[in-house]
Amino acid sequence: MNAIVQFPPRRTTLQEASGAVPAFRFEGLHKTFRSKDGADVVALHDVSFSVERGEFVTVVGPSGCGKSTLLRILAGLERASRGTVELGGRRHTGPSRDVGVVFQAPVLLPWRNILDNVLVPAQIQGRDPKVARERALHYLHLVGLAGFETKYPGELSGGMQQRVGIARALVNDPMLLLMDEPFGALDAMTRETMNVELLKLRERTGATIMLVTHSIPEAVFLGDRVIVMSPRPGRVTKVIDVDLPAARTLELINTERFGSHVRDIRTNLNASGGLDG
Figure 1 (spheres, rainbow, N blue to C red):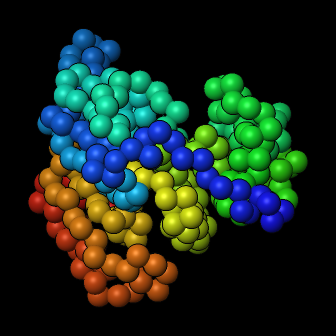
Figure 2 (cartoon, helix red, strand yellow):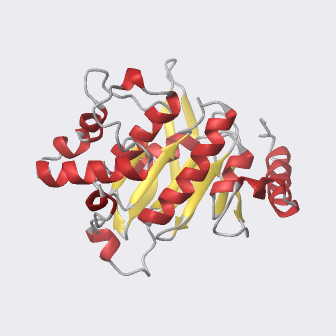
Figure 3 (cartoon, rainbow, N blue to C red):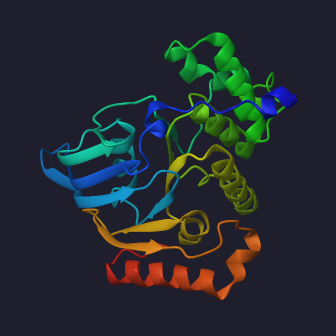
């Protein structure tokens, strides 16, 4: 087991590149959808910001503001109508092995055990089976699921299933981890626990993370910066630097500084007509 704990993370090409290049960058991003009745619906309008390597940014805004669309464009699952997306200084237009994605529902294959579920991305990309297995065991250990490798999804709680989803997203050691409301379906206590564990995981992996959430307190607790978006069409109305300690515990939520950041975001959302909780 010690060999698994100490398994060295693989460094991707992008991670080895100069730190002067942002992890990713949006410039003048627009996204328009065609509705069933033929009308154009503008989801995103002139979105521009960049994120440094190793940074944890959270994106918050009202329902329908384009948060998930923004994440899907960065994941390469959607194409922007216009504007540019750069990943590691290069134009980014499709899925990449340097990007891992965790959705709200982990979508595990019920007929495959936990280890085999984590291995799915590595198998799709034709990775060396032995190396992939070692890496899968490594990340299952990091997310607290060592010993559950032969269990099946139906035997795990919702929080444990989401941990499997996170391990699966990390198995190819992506430079960038994207998370779309990953804890939204969990109860409050489990969600808080997962937030703390996610910060520990970020510290151990050094990955750049962008997390989309409806929860303002969650956005503040997790983020180095919070990207605040307006109602549709989604645009960036404010970027808040979270000047809280890097090592965060749940006790931080009760501090005045934490509350000040939450109030700042609520005020901004209220001013833009997008306060939804």
